[in-house]
Length: 101
Image (cartoon, rainbow, N blue to C red):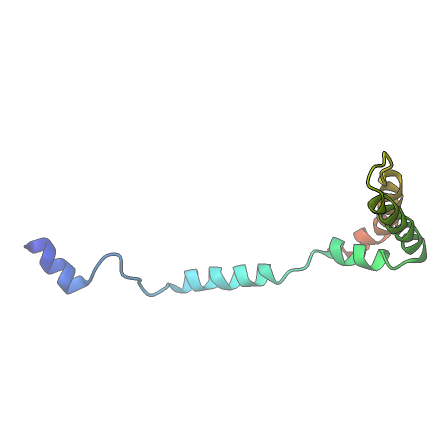
């Protein structure tokens, strides 16, 4: 009976309690972290718009269209993909460290 009285007086231990200021602060920090944007992603997007990367992407897309249109082929677009990634990463390498704090 003593246990039942405590539950009635103090409530069910599973009930949600008010959050402490420290817990509220942690939640605010987590929300701020979610808003962060990876600078590498934004730099990659900008680099993909450069002339050299656009040309490499066009070659890659043409290869993918050619391979996709055939039912049986041994051709793949590995070389074109590597060319595109190399061009993009070359551009990114020159810009990424200037954006870091």
